[in-house]
Image (cartoon, rainbow, N blue to C red):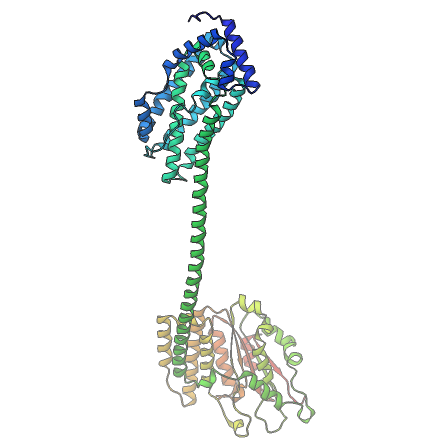
Length: 553
């Protein structure tokens, strides 16, 4: 294309003047035009008129983009993106143009290509927005495109802006699911329209000849309007960021409110659960006690059996055997618990019987046995004697029967039925925590109740023996169902039981041999002489231990 009355050298000189003026801070329109001679001004005006043929959208186009739906914007975006990419590729492939182009153009094109690629994601981001609102500044990046060709200072400025815009547009795709509000869609639409206009101006720029681009550069000095346009774009980005922070703030507040409500609800629920558990526990305990009371009556046990005063009995024994006739009381630890015979009985893994007996000589009129404190201390210190961890791990349970008569002359003649002893042992096992498995099970409780109810009343010695064997069977079945590994049985004063010590011992041996559970039986008797137990020792083969300790020895 001809250059009228101005040669290329004069154009280059004018270009250098523009460059120097810009670097000296005098690149405003008035300073720019005052530095031009008349010929240059004439040339620039003509070239600008030619370049202006590629001007902005028509009024219809402006109206279209202003009121376009998101689908229409998407179509425009794809159309201009394809055109811009094609023109960009054509520009790069043309060797003669590339030789005349400055290095700044190529750098700009590389950045612009990254921008276009980032914008491909924007199409997907904005696809579902469905809004036509929002004013996009027309020609927002027109001056950026033109001045980036020639002015290095402006190139650096635009390069940074293109990187920022590329990052912001690419970020929109990731933010869409996190910020789906109407306001955020509007802000994205504004940036979206700016992108469409940017691509439109890119197409216009690439369609210009190099000389027209140069003339366009002279007509629009590099610094004119650039800062304002970029600030508009940055402002849109800041508004988007403000909206994001506002949404985040609202979400945080909502989360805090929800968290507070959850904490309050949890406290209320916990209180309700605790109250409900208290009620349920109370009802369960009452039901357990009612069923235990039913079994107690069927076993013909007095209510006093459940509330035996162990400490009261211990105190009575202490007062009775408090150095009468200068005879010391029984040293349970030294005389019994520290004996090797006791250690063997306690530590054995099989069922066994420990029989402690001896004479009581003082006070002369007492009905108590001076050996009874051994039974009392074994019961009260059960966990420490057997080891709390051992009892817990081996599922060891304690059941006992203590002599309950008052210390009177008449009580020396009183005898207790062994059926009462066995019934008490059964009831204690059922009253334990493990016993709840039967008490709270309808079928198990009904079967147990029926088994006890079927027992015959006793009066004769023969009937007592038969009932004792039936009670043994019931106790064995209870231990089996409760899965108790070891049961420690403590019986004080078998000399006070009907049937005689030898027969009672035979009943205990029968119980021990039939039970699958390990039984550790500890019995005491106030008797200087024991029954003939040679056959019993032979029968049990090391599972029977007898220790004699007389008070007057």
